[in-house]
Structure formats: structure tokens, C-alpha cells
Length: 89
Image: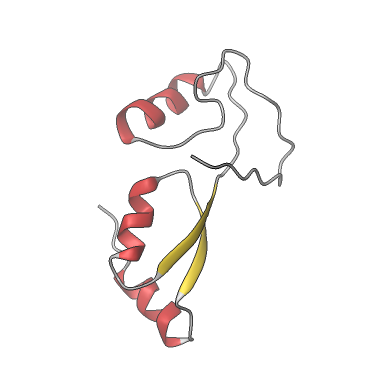
């Protein structure tokens, strides 16, 4: 498990109490919030699934609980690099 204490402390020290987090990993949110910061938005990291990375992305989704844009689709949508996708669950 990664350690978020020092980073969270630094963010608190500079006056932040709420943050947006760029991640697909819901465990990261819990780790950060455990140190007193409130995550107001989880912004997904969009990676287009292809033949070379599909198994890796499926494993991240199925075994680690990552929320991925290609989840449940046979032909994932294409998002150009730098595109941010917001979604509600």
C-alpha cells in the first residue's frame, strides 16, 4: 500500500482542504481522505484500450477495482491524449 501521509500533510500545510484527484484507483481516494483531505472529484486517466494493453487494463479493473473508461465495452471510445472525461457513478 502506498503512503499518502506526507503528501497530504504538505497539501494541508499550504491551506488545502479539498482536492481533485487524477486517478482511476478508488483506493487512492480512501488513502488520501484518511489524512483529512476531502476529495471532491476523481478525474479519470484515460488510456485507450488496444490489443497490447487490454489484458493489463482488464486486470487493473477486475483485480484492483480501477474505474476504467473501457469497462464493459468491446470497442472502447477513442480519447485523444490530454482529454479529461468526467462521469458519475
